Amino acid sequence: MHKQEFINIIAKLKKQLDHDLEYVKKLCDLFGSNFCNPYNNHNLFDVITRQLASNFKHDSKAKELINEFMYDYDFGRSKNSYIDSADTLWNMLIEKCELKK
Image (cartoon, rainbow, N blue to C red; front, side):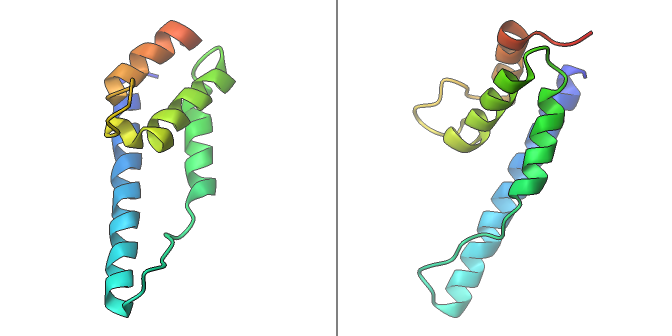
């Protein structure tokens, strides 16, 4: 896998998750509800992140870092994020998990 392909996939996952959350917010506003959960794309996101991680020798560590970036650090938007971009994530994965040849 090439770096730019990885970054593009991460960007599309971010865009989809943002879209899902915005859609749910609009539904909550429309129905006047304070309790709305987005529909569950977990299985789809899990398959994609597993596939991304499979490009690295240490795939379980890679999947952990990818999930941390996406969910814990909101794709690098969290103030406390030490992984601030997909580019930074890629570089960390190369360093810590080794790209398969």
